[in-house]
Image 1 (tube, helix red, strand yellow):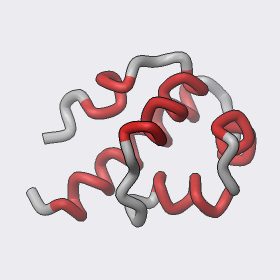
Image 2 (cartoon, rainbow, N blue to C red):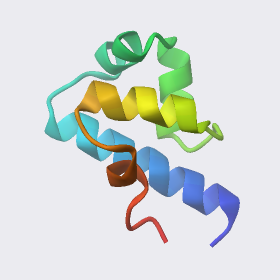
Image 3 (cartoon, rainbow, N blue to C red):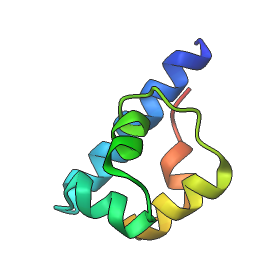
Image 4 (cartoon, helix red, strand yellow):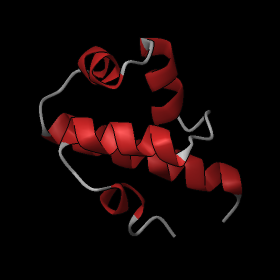
Length: 73
């Protein structure tokens, strides 16, 4: 799997969890103190996120960071 594939899978996982919690992309971005465009890039797999960013997203989604990255391989 390429790095790009991994980022795309991560973005899809974040989006899946977000949608299962009935949270809009704008709401998630606001809860993470991000611009909506940044959240869009993360979910589309076009941004290489830092661990700090993943922690903010996980906290906003009420999950652990490991839940975001588990089973991506």
